[in-house]
Image 1: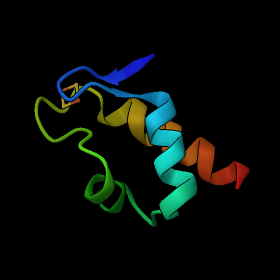
Image 2 (image 1 turned 45 degrees about the vertical axis):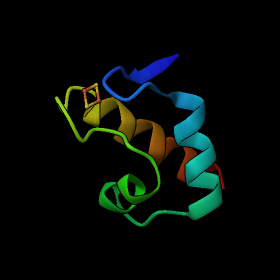
Image 3 (image 1 turned 90 degrees about the horizontal axis):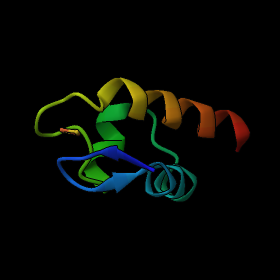
Image 4 (image 1 turned 180 degrees about the vertical axis):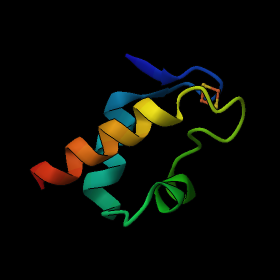
Length: 57
Ligand code: FES
């Protein structure tokens, strides 16, 4: 499922990036994948997915 339509980033991509890079914040996650850097509509959902994945690591 696409989370960020502007950049074509899926929930799977976010979860993989979190597992690989262990970001401390959403700002850090954005350094690895282009999510939430345009219209910003996806930020809330992307952040929730990031936090959910961090709790499972
Ligand atoms: Fe992610 Fe627009 S949907 S920046």
